[in-house]
Length: 295
Ligand SMILES: Cc1cc2nc3c(=O)[nH]c(=O)nc-3n(C[C@H](O)[C@H](O)[C@H](O)COP(=O)(O)O)c2cc1C
Image (cartoon, rainbow, N blue to C red; front, top):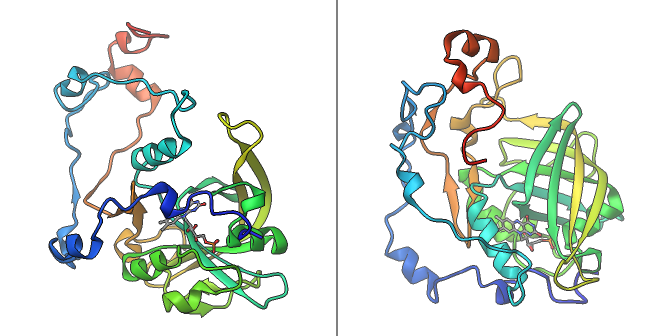
């Protein structure tokens, strides 16, 4: 299971790493900056922005041209869509998923950045697995067999370990030992949560949907799993007394970018949401139309 065919998104096929000698390139770079005080909450770029103003770049972005890309164009390999999209839809949160085999004889841990929350009552999450059911990754096999998993959020303080769990280990080899991360018990599910994680969610499998290639008819290319969160675990120093706000300076999440790149949180800023009735009272009616020029 999962091992009969090569993994759909194997490194040898995708070639995410652009560096023939990665260690040499990394050694030439500045060291990790451990200066958390450098991160600030700043003003927005244009605090005096007015309704209808548009961009804050003096329309510079309007001087560039776009190229149209058909994802299914003849001769365009699907891996080009993968590489383009993972470099465009950024930064992506990473669901670091812990599962257990049905008989409990093996455990699994792996990162997935086709991941997000899509609802909060009930708490619902989606995860996308590359490859159809016939190529199911170990996480998906366990998820299907046990109907449960624990999604952990990756923080800076264990990013190398988390990345190491993306290794193409055969089913039954636990990435927990490879990573050196520590399991902690969950409450509702049998899989462990990652003790190093600042925030984890115990999940039950809600539904799955398999996708088929548009270019290679009949080829199943991905499975989306919808998960329902049934328990949250938050590190005490990161969560407020009402248990409804997590401190970004404690969780320090990492985002996934294109290729083999990750990102850290940078400076933050706040912008209140506008209220239609209030804005309408203050603004010129020209801003309240059913279409604008060019549409
Ligand atoms: C940061 C990161 C994000 C990833 N996101 C995904 C993803 O969203 N979907 C996917 O199928 N594989 C993704 N992968 C690859 C899997 O982690 C990798 O195939 C892993 O071996 C799967 O483990 P498993 O077979 O033990 O489940 C990602 C890898 C990394 C490092």
